[in-house]
Length: 194
Image 1 (cartoon, one colour):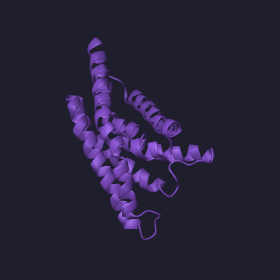
Image 2 (cartoon, rainbow, N blue to C red):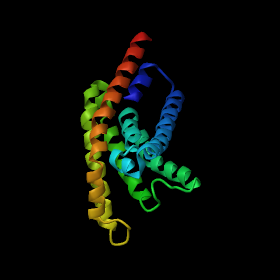
Image 3 (tube, rainbow, N blue to C red):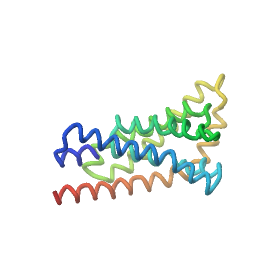
């Protein structure tokens, strides 16, 4: 979606990369800060229920497309882990990091596959987010099933966490598309004024 807006403004390739890099960095920063704020306000259970890191990643996929969104999805938990580890409280925990990187990569990749449809009609953000959530959670569960003999997680434990996170997924299934639709309208309005 964002690519279309940048193309309509006749930006050079270098400027497009700069804008997308800045937006990606902002979304990654939000993915680091938002969980910290939720944990401060609601504690660790709030993070498990609301899944705050997922919101910027889903936005990244919908706005930036599959490739750039994928980078946001992979780098968000990695940077969060590195930054929070420096303060002695890693989030996510090291054992969960590869699973979360995989899950959020799928979230961003799948939602990013809809970006051209979203550029045509913002309502496509709704199926984009829901498809991404389903695919990401299934991949996460599948990865745990494949590695539970040597990883610290089991399918029943992760299934319980998935059930605990339904509220966050439901909120994001509505909130992210509404944000994307709003941004799309802004971008179209701005391009009409150019």
